[in-house]
Length: 92
Image (cartoon, rainbow, N blue to C red):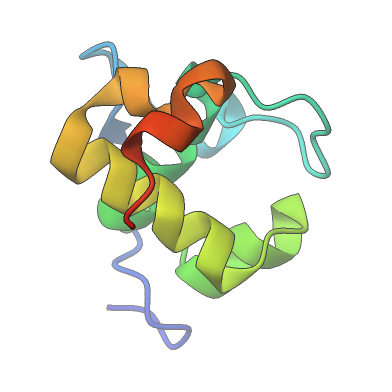
């Protein structure tokens, strides 16, 4: 594990089953979030490609926003990351 808390992975498995490297991640400060990009960021953090802090800084996310993506993905699958369905999967 690196000094910043991540595992220093060279790649992780992305949401589509392909290898995902740092170069494959969405560009920093992305403003349009589609479900696939959200799932890529979650896979990168979970797999140790980047740390949670790096992801939040790189994409101007709050920890709560990232955690909501992670929760939606884990409990409801990738369709829960679609903006049109976000209310359907939000905890009450």
